[in-house]
Amino acid sequence: MNTKPSSTNGRTATFSRNLRLEALLKDINTSLWISEEKILGSYQAMNFPVVLIMGPMRSGTTLLMQWLANMDIVAYPTNLLSRFYQVPIIGAKIQLLLTDPDYNFRDELGEFVQQAEYKSENGKTKGVLGPNEFWYFWRRFLVESTRDVWSDDELRQSMDTQTMLAELAGMMDVFKKPFAAKGMLFNYNIPFLDSILEKVVFVQIKRDPVANVASVLDARKRQLGSEGAWYSFKIPEYEQLKTLDPVVQAAGQVHFINQAVSKGLAEVADERKFSVDYEEFCANPAHLFVSLCDKLGYADRPYTGPESFRTSRDLGERERAAIATALARFGYP
Image (cartoon, rainbow, N blue to C red; front, side):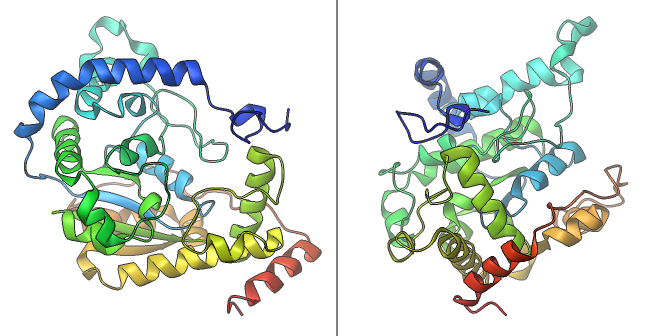
């Protein structure tokens, strides 16, 4: 595998952006926006809740989304839907046309009907119906979309919440299900999201912090070619972390994000949130299924998913000790 950093965006060659694809998608979305804009007014109220996965990078959010994708209780942003980031209601209808068995006339499009695999690489999945992080969709509504941090007041004043809410409602109307997505771009803005979303369930995922930090460091090497390169969103504490040793830096990332999510959720009503322990989820995903169905109002849904998932790789004593020492700087025992 080529781990030489890309000359255009700092990523290794494997993770470098496809600029021709991005130009084509921009053209398609711009062309379809005229039609999408005309139907937005039809979607005012949310008939289903939005399910938002919150927590640090490399904490199990992708596995959780892949699992949700196969449980048939929520809709979610697929790799196909993500390509219609500016026109997701039209994109949702196109996805139904291409992938829903109800519309597969005489198996003309049978190759599109598939389940999401439990495989990913730094959050990137494969397949038409693999879960997508959907960042292009969320960033559309932000005035300064290249930033990673905003205060709640900034979002209240500048975010195009009217269009965002209409499109979320529209997608759920098309799919006739709640819509689940990663919300980690807004880990520090949970009270704001809680205030604008009529129906929402926040799912906080927590992972053993040592394993979480080790996974962050691995992801840095894979995607950026170095443990010392900053990975994922630049959180508010970035300036105080950026010059530190990579292990301490990654430990700080995980710590501050967990802290921000817990603080934000403290202001959210109990019926609109719950917490997931990654290791417990891997050991017994059926337990989470029951809890989530209860939150979403589904009664007597049978669980048909995997009995368990394999957790993270084993860490050597030296690596575990180094990470534990780094975490101790942020108050971990």
